[in-house]
Amino acid sequence: MNGTQDWQKNDGDYFPEWLRETAVALVKPVPPIDHVLLEVETADIHKIAGQTHAQWMNMGTDGVVSKGIGAGIALNDSDGLVFYGDEVGWGGLFHDYQDFHGRKIARVVSVGSPEVTAKITVLEDLPTEPEDFFSGSALGNSAEPIRTQVVDEQSLRKNLLANEPIQWPQVENGPLTGAMVTTIVVDREGRVRDVGTMVSDNPALNAVAQQWISQLKFKPYLVDGLPVQAISTLTLSFKTLRPAGTESFESARTYFERGRAVGFPSAKGDAPYTLHAEFVARESSGAVMTGQYQDTWANATHWRREARLGESYLVRTEDGEDRYGLESGPDASVLSLLLHVMEPIPAIDTFVESDWKIKKQEVNGIKTIRIAVGPEDAAGRMEEGNSRAFWFDEDGKLIQAITSGAQINRSDFASFDGSQVAQLIDIRVKNTLTIRLHVDSLQLGNSLPTDKFIVKGHLYTRAFTDEVR
Image (cartoon, rainbow, N blue to C red):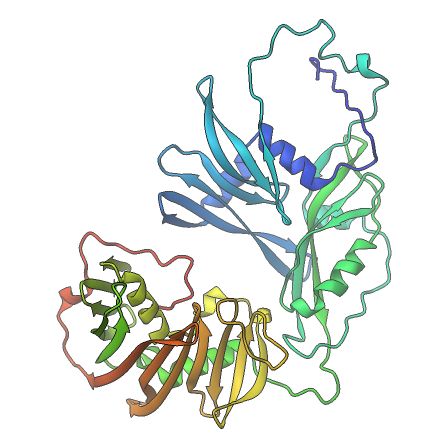
């Protein structure tokens, strides 16, 4: 660029989006400010490990159905520098900030999926440049610059040419109706050159959708009368069938909510109670110790869960709109695992229905419904550490689970206020019995001290966890 003259040498007819975003992140590592400031007003804000994270959804729509793609930005609280950003047409993970004339410059930037990492190896003052250094004409004939424009989906769809409708295959798992959305890049001639990751209500249909999208044709998108590369969302709705003879199941959400209501008194929420349990676990020192777990429940917004093992302690509470959390000692991680596995069914707001596969499976002679996500071997065994699975019996009780790198076995169920509560819980990590817990007291309670649910100075934000409590 030389004043108002903008020159570009093109070795092809397309500027790959991953390369463009990498270049932009290196030389202009700030988000589209007006858009981000608008989104942040209603974004989910979390403060974690010295950073402020803002998360929102970029909504795509075909005019009938809508589907969102996650977006966000994180800033370091200490200096306000961008740690990562993710938006349609912009994003990156920024590392190794160093000073250059009073400005902090990220020397390492990672962009995209699969990830591309760029490193600044030289950043120095510009020496006296030749007279024609900024004159593109000195390097040859000028080509029409390839420009990229972020476009809203409805505007891009106006340029979509007629095409054959997509033929959805029959699927054994997941929803039969729903929506999916992705990002696409359309070149200056209207060809789809890049299809991003699908965000889908049924991933079994993703490959077919991506193939169909890649063959779409558009009229060139014009800005000031000139064709540009256009990046936008593309949203599709689907409707399909099960193959003949395939067994039909309810949704994962239905099994999870039923299991929560059947087996966990806090899910019913209609009566105060106190649950106490003893557990045996191995401390970090190697010693096997007996610990204590207690769950005190007044109602859905006033409860307290706590566990002790030797010198370690963990407590989580809720008091109205405030949550509190405190952990201390060398084995706080063991206690955190314990609280998780005591109520391991994931919260409804933390999972995507279409990720889960459902089938019948027998466990120790018990007929169950297995809800699972992640890799499994040919025999149907889930890969501990990389998979999650939950087995519910015919009554809806959770009898086994694999989550957080542990296998949980729940047995010896007892009736309590309309629930079937497991009295014995075994937790295995790498096939080794790590924690054994036995409920020794579960009783209704009418009056509970109001200050029991406040842990002053230790406000807690529920973020990046699938735990309900």
